[in-house]
Each structure stands twice: as structure tokens, then as C-alpha cells.
Length: 402
Picture 1 (cartoon, rainbow, N blue to C red):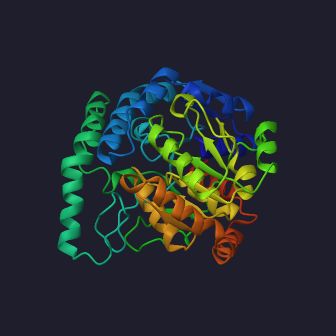
Picture 2 (picture 1 turned 90 degrees about the vertical axis):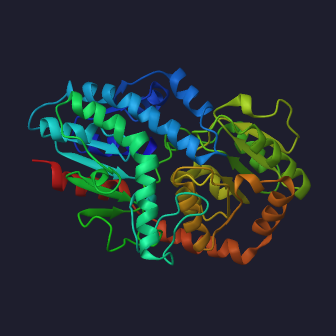
Picture 3 (picture 1 turned 120 degrees about the vertical axis):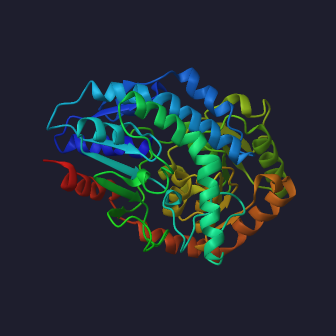
């Protein structure tokens, strides 16, 4: 959500009227950014969703997310349609919210699709890692084509294409097949929000796509580190922070194991989670829990960052120059993790192997390897003074605005 808040801020600063559509859970972010907000669905449904998407089962998690997007798409479509000013409105949306692309077809509204992670771009030359063990560049061509066909036939089509076609029938639009093959990129402007050194564009990616750097907006200008967190960091050696991701409320085992690992390795810890119920009721003196901390302010002060491999967490850690331990569970996380490991700034532990002993050993390596930290800082210099949001807005307005 935060990158789209940043888009709203940038467009509003250029004199455009901006309306952000999102779950009311995110209303405060829009309010702080001083952009208009239309709440969609309820906070209860948002929280319930993340209680049902266990990261240990990627297929189950993604199916539940697909169901969620299918449920909310009609409401988004009709709410956005009600605000259209013919000849003036443009629509910007993320990879899986299809409402802007539907408005393009039904009302001729110029549309931009913003892909935050490279895994959405399908390639036979360099396939994204969509599950722990997947096809790669060395896989024979026929096997790659079969893998993509099976993924579409038995997963994407039942969970994404069928619900979308039901809505398209109501809107008198033609039915689609294999939407992740090409339709996912059918917009007037397609933006990949990641640098080419993180994911090199392939010749079989969409030719009309443009590339920007990571958005790196973290709400930090509005919400600094809390006094309690700042004092905790100052009170001893740099701690390790742990995050299961904002879209996870069932990470009880992750946090329990992480605490045990830090006790074994003699490290201080910060547990990051909006969901207090997944944090142990009693914490050691060298461990603190906070619901939120802006990564731009927090991560540079850490010894290491342990996270789920979401593109926001991964990119913020790259900018901070902090060593990463990634525990990917679903969605784009496996691909992001692989790319960070290839850059030489991260280690990976899959959920089934996330034990106190394994984590403690990995953290000792990450926090004591001075050459690794220097390399992390060298990678971070690539993200200095980069305004990806402004560049992306230039491209979107250049292609969409009349």
C-alpha cells in the first residue's frame, strides 16, 4: 500500500486531484499524506484474511488471496467508476487489482499498472522463482512451456481467471484465457518498480514496460521511531529485527523460534508485528515488541534484518545496507529472496527449516562478517538519491495524461 500512498502524494504535489481506494486499515496513511481516501471493505475482513493465509503453505495462501481479490474487485470497479470525469480521469492500480484495467475496457479510462516485484513478469529465458523448487534458466524449453501451462490451467485460471470472467460477463466484456500470460500487462502504461540490477529485464518481457527503481516510501516522514524503541536501540549493541510481514497474523511459531535463536546467539531483538496476539506474552529483557517502525529510520541501526522476503522489506534492507536473513513463505517472496542471495547480501532459510539452532548460526555469521556488511553498504550506494516515484509518475503522465 505504501508505494501507492507515495504515488498519491507525488501526483497531488503536481496539482492533480487524487483519490486512494483501499481497506480502511490504511486510512491513516492517506490522512497523514493529505490525500482523499475512499474506504473499501472492512478492517475486520482485512485482519481475517491474514489469519487465513498461513505462510507455510504457499498454494493455500495464494488461493485465499485470489479469492480476496475476486471478492473486492466489483466494489472497487463500481466505486471508481462513480468518480470518473470523462477526459480527465486516469486509473493506477497494482498487479492483482483488476478494476483499473476493466475501466479501461468499459469506459476508455487511461490505465497504468504498477508491478512492485519482478516475479509477475513471465519469462522462459530467466523464470522467476514462484515456489521453493521451480523451473529455471537451465530447464529444457518444452518443460518450461509445460510448467507454465499447468500453472495456468490448474491454479491461475480456476482462482483468478474464472472469477474475473464472471465479472466480465456482467460487464458485457469478452471472456479471457490465461490472463497471466499477457492480459496482466495490458495497460496504457506498465511500470516495474525495481532497478535492472535487481532484476534484469528479459527480451521476452513486455516490450512496452518501463522500469523505475524501488519506491522506498516507508511513512517515515510522518512517523519517526518511537521514544521507547529509540531508547532500546541505544541501550546496547545493534539488535536484530524480525518481521513476518504486515500480511501475516499467524506467525506465533516464527516469533517464538526467533526469540530462542537470539537467546542462543546472545543477540538483542526487535519483534515487528501489527498483531500483538502472535507475540509471546512475556518477553526477555533483551527483546522488545513494536507494532510499527519506519524502515528508513530503523534498518540502518540494526545488526541484521530477518524477514519474509516481501519486496518492500527486501528493498528497504538493500537501501539500509543491512545483512538479511530471509524466510520466504509465499507469493513473490521466493523470487525476491533468490535475487537478494545472488546479490550477496542475504541468506535464506525456508519455513520448514527455520529452527532456533539454524537461525542462531545464520545470525552469528551475518552479524560478525565485516566483509559482508561492507558489501551490503556498497549495494546500498546504488539507491542513494533515487526518486523512483517521481520518475514513474513522469512516465505515467507522459503516456496517459491528455
